[in-house]
Image (cartoon, rainbow, N blue to C red; front, side):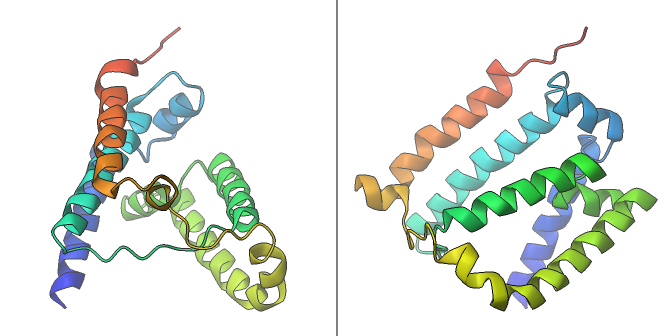
Length: 176
């Protein structure tokens, strides 16, 4: 129960950061997709950089459970296409549509409902399409750490530093 509470509070904090960053704003999302407004990309890079370092530091201290999912490239590629189409059509990614729905935006509420319906339909279809999605190009539970033999924390440090540098030094807003 305590872990659920911590997870809920972290989710609320992340949602608040998305809200304050304007990640549920149509104008901000459009500016991001046009590569004119870099704030959402900066938010994402910062979250990934801090999260990566945090998870590996927790793992180093024995406080994280690193459960690696199999790398089945076909399913991931199809999922990426569906994600991209959904983002382009609705203007929301999964996190920002929850923020928008919490704000009471009707389009975001319908996006959440559509995502839930899509997940339900996928769960029913999965037994029939599993072989086509998972078996081809399934590389198993592989990690960069396994491929290189370098400890995860030593990979996370430069990766996180690169993303944070990208967020705070490289990415600049471009207004025409």
